[in-house]
Amino acid sequence: MPYHSLFKIKNAVRHLKAGAVIAYPTEAVYGLGCDPLNEEAVMTLLEIKQRPVDKGLILIASSLAQLQSYLDLDQTLIDRITPTWPGPVTWVIPAQSWVPRWLTGDHDTLAVRVTNQPIAHDLCAQFGSPLVSTSANPTTRPAIKVARKLLKPFAQADIFIVPGSVGSLAQETAIYEALTGKRLR
Image 1: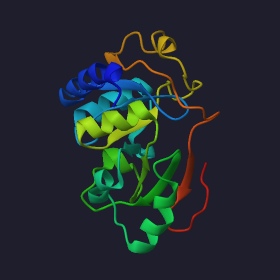
Image 2 (image 1 turned 90 degrees about the horizontal axis):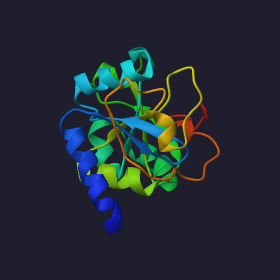
Image 3 (image 1 turned 45 degrees about the horizontal axis):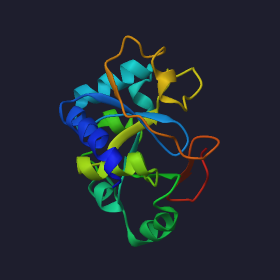
């Protein structure tokens, strides 16, 4: 990890462990994230974003190992998804029965990605767990690509912003259904 980012990553991890919502660069846009197993943090994130819980959320991770306990994977699915990771591809995969509804929404699946964006990857690695990742914008508004543009729409929210550059993707990551390989977005 580059020395210049170690302080901001460790500071963000402290906020995550305290139950905070953070904003950080992803492959295409700024994302909002939190500890996926902290229900209060997830509900705060959903309120800030004005997103209904029934839609479900994406988890990002630094490795497949961080996601495996959340997912009902077999070798066929692993063989399908791993060639795309780390990278800007999100897969919707059957979730383990214990995964909370605040992550899956009204689905029995979970959207997941092993990120290759350096800051997002290092956040997950240092946190030691996946993070919730949803675009950092109120639900009906355009996605945000620059940290300073987070200040106006989230002025009333207590969000820790991790500065950095988003990746080079023109739009948010592609989403595929793992069982069929069908593109969803």
